[in-house]
Length: 44
Image (cartoon, rainbow, N blue to C red; front, side):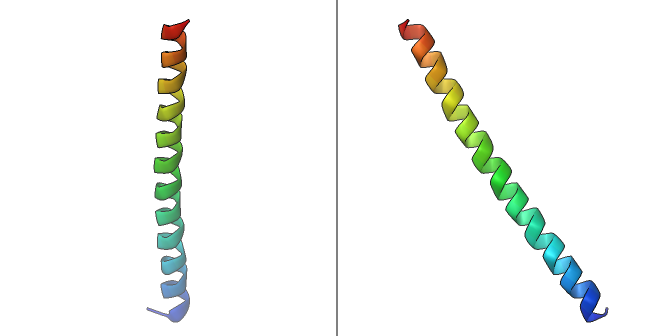
């Protein structure tokens, strides 16, 4: 494989890893927000 293909593949893997991390973080924060809003609704 040429160095260009290797660098493109490495970049793609890095972007995929960052994307997976970002989605996980966003879903965790979303779940926390949903839980908090449900607790507030129970109190009210």
